[in-house]
Amino acid sequence: MFMKKVNHQIKYIIYKNISITVKIKKYRYSKNYKVTYDKKCLQALVTIPKYIAFKSGHQFAIDNIDWIYRQHIEMVPSIIIEHGNLININGKEKNLIFKNDTIDSVTLDNKNIIISSKKASKHGLVFFNWIKIKITELTKSILLEKFQNKNIKKIRISNSFSYWGSCNTKDSISIDWRLIFAPDHVLKYIIIHELCHLTEFNHGSQFWSLVDSKIDNRNFSQAWLKQNANYLYRIRFS
Image (cartoon, helix red, strand yellow):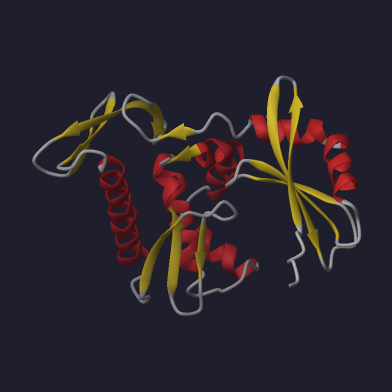
């Protein structure tokens, strides 16, 4: 009986009184050591060639622990969507309020996001469905207003940690759900960005000219995302 070779190890490094998880993984085609930070799993990822010992990968992580630490502290603590927590939405901090009610609904006032659910423990699902509806409705509205000659076959709500939106050649676009917590101009920019890919499936000069013809000051939205991306990535349902 042959045992499957283990191609990764998990290590824990204590640095500045914080325990940081490090995944060390061997890749067949890797030629060098590399360290990245996995924002989804909240851990460092060290990749090494398959012939390198795991202890060397561990030492590489230790050698780069200051960089790893700086990435880590920007991603913690997570902002969990649950009763009593605070969250920014469209530039304003609000309380998350979970209520039991006879109907499922989400309402916003000056201070609160009130999520009502017919079933206990289903408030997160109610809120996520509301987010999907809001982003879908806004996408359809922008499509009708600014892209009258285009059609979308499907609008997906994504949970990516590497891109905010995407478009494929089958006229389907994806928008990350966390953008509901960004200012309106940021969400609209990403939607317009992806809708422009229905015409220009690239990032060439004609694409950016098309984007600029549909929205003002995209640089402002791009700068906001660059500065606040990690805040959005910290938002989780569990």
